[in-house]
Image (cartoon, rainbow, N blue to C red):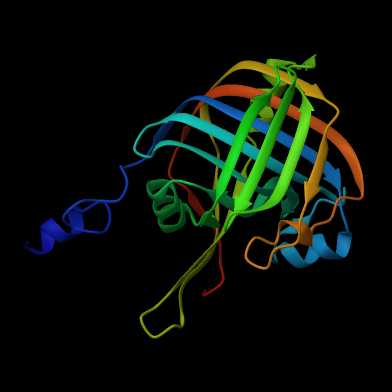
Amino acid sequence: MNQKDVLSLQSMPAASGSYGRPPCRFINREFFIITYESDPAAIRQAVPEPLQPDGSNTVSYEWIKMPDSSGLGSYEESGIVIPCTFQGEPCNFVAQMYLDNAPAILGGREIWGFPKKWAKPRLVVEDTETLTGTLHYNNVLVAMGTTPFKYNVLDEKETAKAIAKTQVNLKLIPDVDGTPKIAQLVAYNLENITVKGAWSGPARLSLIPHVNAPVADLPVKTYVGGKHFIADLTLPYGRVLYDYLQ
């Protein structure tokens, strides 16, 4: 390969790229989100400056099932999102993510800085009535959430607006000597959103302490509620919101 060939490659390894080229289109992407009030000091510790927690003291624990994802495959995901602001503008900080798909982990970390680690999340309907999310890390249950299946109908336009809200990741990539090479806040907005159904209902969440999957570091104090929706959408490339090295 010459230099032009090298620079045209999408990803490592050169012989067979690990993931496809964005934008990524998701069909029938299913979300289960439990929002709860947590400890404000723990939230502040999890959110990197210059982002600011939005003052609600809330955290959203998510399960996402992605059966049809262009360039990435079919997989499920689970993690923590914290409502924040950046220079007064609302956004969501993606604090932790766990999933069972190598292309999505590699591409997510290398392009957008998603905080992805390998684990086994699952989202299923148990005994026809309870939408149930679980997360196992190293074969240990670290999270379980439940809500009644398709309980109350939500407004689909408002749901689409919520999906389109600016999301922010902390992207950290070291240089060959271990010093920081990339240290950025990366923003992105999901696009071309079509909501196919949206529901709300009461929800419960159990978080179990685990050193390598510290979801319980943001403990549940009070439940706000659960949301369940299905949508088609596109994940485009991101943009640098803040560069820690400049």
